[in-house]
Structure formats: structure tokens, C-alpha cells
Image (cartoon, rainbow, N blue to C red; front, top):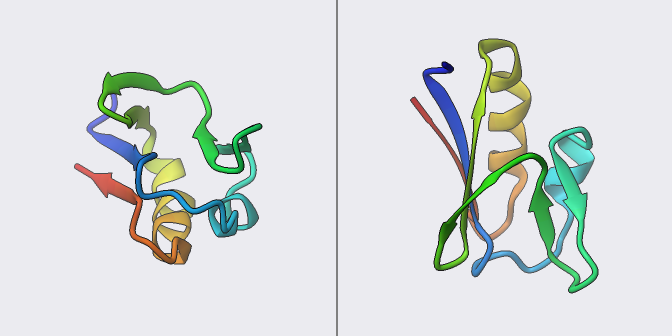
Length: 76
């Protein structure tokens, strides 16, 4: 199991898609104008999580930094 995970607070998402630009394999535009975290688990209340490998951490952090509303976090 991965010791890293990426977390999306979909309630904060404004659909800027800067995360998609940084890491298109991780993020998918949704029909409601926001993004979906691909292959994630719904934790409830608009929070989605996905375990990531060490090789995915750098690009995941880049997508988190690119988010203008801080809806994305990478946690260890």
C-alpha cells in the first residue's frame, strides 16, 4: 500500500482545470464543470482520496500547487 495519497475537496473546485494541465492522467473533467480524481474513493461530503506511488508524487504536488483554490492536497 502506498504511503502517499492525493485528496480532492470537490466542494472547493471551481473548474479551472489547472490540475488537468499539470497531470492529465490523474484528473478528468466532469459534466458539472469541476474535476474528478480518477480511480478515487468517495470519502463523503465531497472529499475524494486516492493512494499514489512515489513516482506519482511530484506530478501530484504540481497539480495541487496549480489549483487556484487549494482544493487538492498530497499527504504522506
